[in-house]
Length: 254
Ligand SMILES: Nc1ncnc2c1ncn2[C@@H]1O[C@H](COP(=O)(O)OP(=O)(O)O)[C@@H](O)[C@H]1O
Ligand SMILES: [Mg+2]
Image (tube, rainbow, N blue to C red):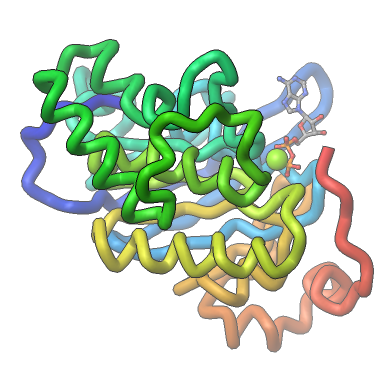
């Protein structure tokens, strides 16, 4: 998560190769491999507890794999200084806004902390990012005044502040009612078109997955069962994929 602006691509290619991770004797990721192309919206879809958030944490560097590799633009993530060369943003499941700060302060936090721009410029950028997510003029509001959908949008605006080349979303529609969830999906599509960033979206929401994905990887119990375009995944004959796609319940997220 860096704001170094010395990379000419607007997006980044991500490769995950043979990733394995256990906590104690619980093997959470059992050799996960996939490649996400520049500018792609790649959805990791799967039930609760399948290892999706753990996988995202590896990509942003909050977890280290037991085995396997992560590459950005073909280079190992352990290459000296590599993470700092790319701008990555994460939109957490909870939105994770700071309640003691206004909306504008939440969005501008990173730029102010790192003194990346003069104050007038920071205020202009905050206004611009809020406008992009449909929250123009809400700078002075406090998070407690906002609906769940609006909080998610503020979290998106905050992610946009570094002009990310890679945006990671963890359950962007959790805890939202279905109609609001649809607007978040539309926002993710619009942001990709606007930023050209690569997007990796982790979700147990089938409607979101099929609504936005260029490709979907279906993950269960730490393994990828199926990977392909939405229409290919929909036709999968894998019994667990069929079960996930046809179950009329939505697994609850912890
Ligand atoms: N830091 C940790 N220590 C121990 N177990 C963990 C840790 N993080 C995740 N797990 C376990 O790994 C499994 C997958 O978790 P997670 O990736 O959060 O699932 P989800 O697909 O719902 O995002 C769960 O059983 C969870 O309890
Ligand atoms: Mg999760």
